[in-house]
Image (cartoon, rainbow, N blue to C red):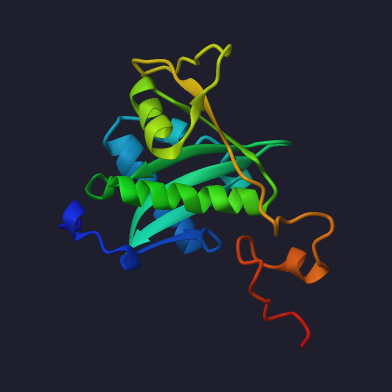
Length: 190
């Protein structure tokens, strides 16, 4: 465990990546295990619920240590932001905001303009104040076994990206690795 302190934050040491390798996915699983299972007593069955292979994962590193993760699931007109967590030593507003904005930018590049999430009221406040989400009115909260409070739905509107991936996007870009659309693939003809 790092001896990181908020006043030692070095922004150049923080990097966020879209998971494209098995090692990165393992790092995301470890961070989720620490945060949800160890800290909050969430069962492995609930933490790894069967949606991981239909999702895009973001992993945040401080130097080379995995410190945060989020899972993004794609629906017709919105992306669902879930399983977001940071290890205790790295729960700094700047780190959380940087990682969240990285994920929001990824979704906007894919052409999405709306993100939803579900959170217990104490965390919903963080989503609203730090990340600009708004409460969704008229939807009943959802109750989960083992959780004291119901989860509420929140929404954030994203600004469309000028370079969003669409049916008009050039073919080579559509073959590139997720999130690395501006980097020519090693398989592209010169």
